[in-house]
Image (tube, rainbow, N blue to C red):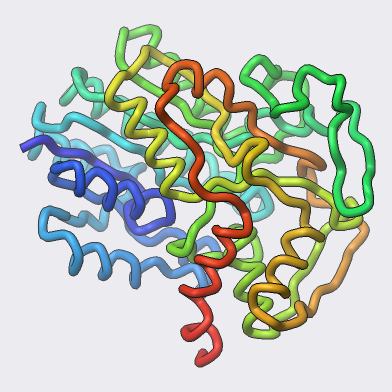
Length: 355
């Protein structure tokens, strides 16, 4: 039986990957030690999702291992050997705000952990496909120097600019303020590319925008739409940081992202890089997202605006998807922001109201 190893398997993208690859007939090996709870507290605890996976998928085996622990990861790889056909590496410290509080842990999880996963992949199952979920933060604050136009509810790019349909992979990741999180993800991102190109392995890097969906354990420091809807339902105060709330994010549903990973798995390339997000099909500003949450929930959001933006934060980010769409023309976005928020609301409404 073909095996897929999924790190961060109880998280948003990891759990969707478990579901997707399981339904394709894979035995799933999940690696997740619930560090998200360590990073962000009780609200971010993913143990509920782990239990859901173990109950729903009999072909799912969970390992409470740390991706930085070479011995533990080597034992798991040694157990399955060349039966492993895919390694989907989703585990990370995902917040650029949190990274500044503990740069050492941030870097060791994101960079050293990725190296541990890559080296065990190379030694035990080099014929497999290695997929890494990177981030648009590898571009640092370079997008903020694009010609942006302030409109009533959002910033937008000059329509004559080459990036009018989204930022593509030609944007430099050099000479820019990344945040410490961005820097640790750059290290991991480049490592995954290098293992592909230097060793001739099928490694792919997916630089995500905002990744979202109902399985997200959203918190104040990570999980934009999920946490926003949670605050709207519960009455908890939400904080907007800078840019008049007009900062724009593209949002991709976990299903659409994992479907793109599947397309890559079926026809992999060597050391390839893709920007991946909602693109021009699924994006919103903070103000627009708040209005949608209020409309869907029927409640007013309690929020506080602070003038200071987060360090290295993007004013406008929309992922350019043309490269991936050219390589994999049968892949399509199926969710937009309103449908994503409606699904999140239906998942959260009863749970949050009774907390």
